Image (cartoon, rainbow, N blue to C red):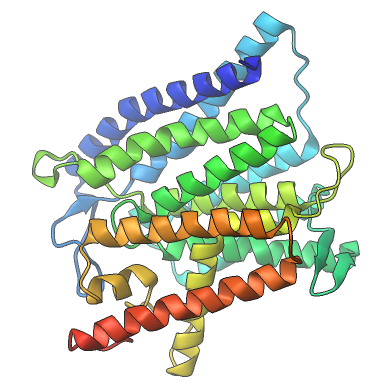
Length: 366
């Protein structure tokens, strides 16, 4: 077995152990300070649940990656180089993490969070990491920096909000993130960019621990937790960074990949499509873009008759279906055609769900 795969497994295990150490501490802290996600008519849960699970994500990732890189240095004599975009990524991630934490504790307005996301997003193109090639999507190939840099900021903010807004039922945001992260492990592993494989393994480990407490934890025993904005914003920023990193055409890091943009997009397709659809519905109904509602994909599946866990399984299965489909289609079709097929499938899926909702005597839209 490749030695780097073993180190990635080590990062996963260390991160998972950190999660099992940190999350019970966070649960006890939330209980002492009465920091709960309070139920209301928009939310699915009906009991008070601590909402600071995301606080464990960044420390667990950093500890696991730092330990594994140190072991690589000692055992293999590997020379560890910290690139400028890695430093700027950590700075941007720290801003996002702090923003989510403050919002979970005292609350922030949507505009303040939005501005913080823009500031954090700017760090990546400033460090020279931005979308510089669309690989023929809609007939566009190379993208100049004056277009690619603002486009990158938009993409980062959009992905961050996609992961944040789809965090509506147990396991959904974390489950979709784990699926996307596993896809990035495969993509970066194919290119033998092992530092990113280790980094991703370091976040998957704590997410698996979080999913244990989030899905199967007993709120009566103070063992159930939500990730809160500190978790969903952090995950969104990490995924957007990986998206930009894999999409960027940089021969010094990875060889040219004609399917780089399509495969990266595919890993995030369900939360991205969901946010686009929800925004369109809000605008159509003359509602504010930031106004909360119950029109997300998980809300609709539950109105169609599924339980929380049933909706979770359907959405994860749908995301996995897209991954397999687009991976196969990318070998024989242009990216533009593949995305068009994806959109048609998504629309048909929602038409079927809407019909079932109407059969149940409920409104297809909230």
